[in-house]
Amino acid sequence: MSDDLLFMPAVTAAAQIRARKLSPVEYTDAVLAAATSAQPHLNCFATLMEEQARADARAAEQAVMAGGKLGPLHGVPVHIKDLINVAGVPTRNGSAIFADNPPAVADDVLVERLRAAGAIVIGKTTTPEFGVKGLTDGPSFGITRNPWNLERTPGGSSGGCAAAVAAGVAPIGLGTDGAGSMRGPAACCGLVGLKATLGAVPNEAGRDAFGSNIYAGPLSRTIADAALMYSVLQGPDPRDPWSIGTHHPVTLSPALLGQDLSGIRLGYIPRCANPLVAADVTANTQASLAAWEALGAEIEEVTDTIDWIEYEGRVLYQANFAVFCAQFLPRWQNAMDPVTLAFMERGRGFTLADFRTAEYARTTLFRAIQALFTRYDFLVMPTMTRTALPVGHDAANDDIIIDGQRCGITRQGWTSPQYPFNLTGHPALAVPSGFGDDGLPTSMQIVGKWGAETDILRLGALLEQSRPWAQHRPPNRA
Image (cartoon, rainbow, N blue to C red; front, side):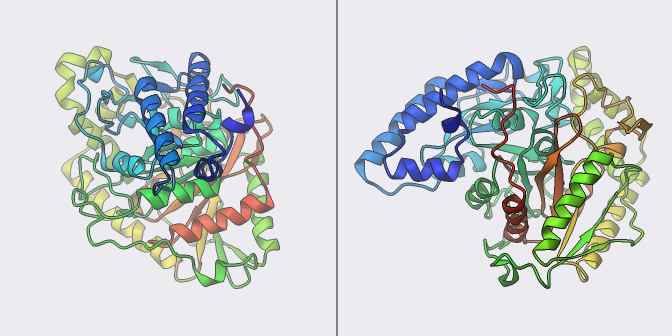
């Protein structure tokens, strides 16, 4: 099969399908063959929907030949993280608890929207149990590996989605992000990952609709593909209270229309709760800042003292797992991921006062970030403090090592720039910034004002033009 076909952007593929230059059937067959080829070494799919995908591809081809109106993703393959319902397929949540789950009766609203846009769902991608950690592995399905280096993780919890897209298995995938679970895998795998503003993309799958910190969105190889997929996903849904009455128009600030960033102010945050950033990540961060500065942007280091509420964020995160998963312990404890159990144990140790204090701290952090946006148009920082971790890393107990120094567990030392913006609700975009000394991708995070998805995508696109990345292909692909 052709690498050029497998690594073709979704926007290009959709255009070629509309022009009858690319067959949806042949395209889908090629992607399914790539998925089958990649699965033994990447282990990125929980389920492949070959029969249904081929039937949908035939229907898509018939629609093209009939000359009817086609959606923006018509004939484009996509996969769905296995925390999101796809009709006719079990949702196993990365857990042995749901290994025998019956097929979902209906599509999640986001899957409905992707299908309505013409996308062809080819399968469901792996996730750690309930999306609990920043690596993608578990007792029920094994280890999902990074196509840039099979001994490294693709990140988590949308690691299966990221590994597949990076390896050329579909140009786009639908992930979720509860504490960096799209942006982390994007950073590990050299991809674009967009966490939109709270409520911009409805979250039907969320258990706590009102106190939500969980988002769904695109993982892709290019900014244009992320923007196209976001345009399909966004919009209100009555099942998500944050989305009701929310209007996030897909518009661009006039100052970003060209390639002259004069007058645009970027607030650079070197570190959040993390004590260190690896030297190679810092070097690529500085190169990215220089690229924006060359276009006229004014860059200022943020020196404000900000409490990034790492402890309080952990209270919210782990206490939620303790409550939700308690129902499974009597029967399933011995089959659950030890990391899930460790997080539950810690979560049970927090008091109601701890939980409410953490909720108050979330509001304080939101207002601190809002205050920064009175001075800056964007906040920028490394997405991750270092490149992808070894696949055997224990997320509950092992320290992150950066340039020979111990930096705490993953959310303290590795994913620290990500979880704050799950809590504040601001849109955040992970974009590749280069490669580390070990040959693995590094990443920049762009954070915008509420509703500024198009603006952060545009700033990412200008970096993509200055420092292209999509031409790079990992060695361990289909």
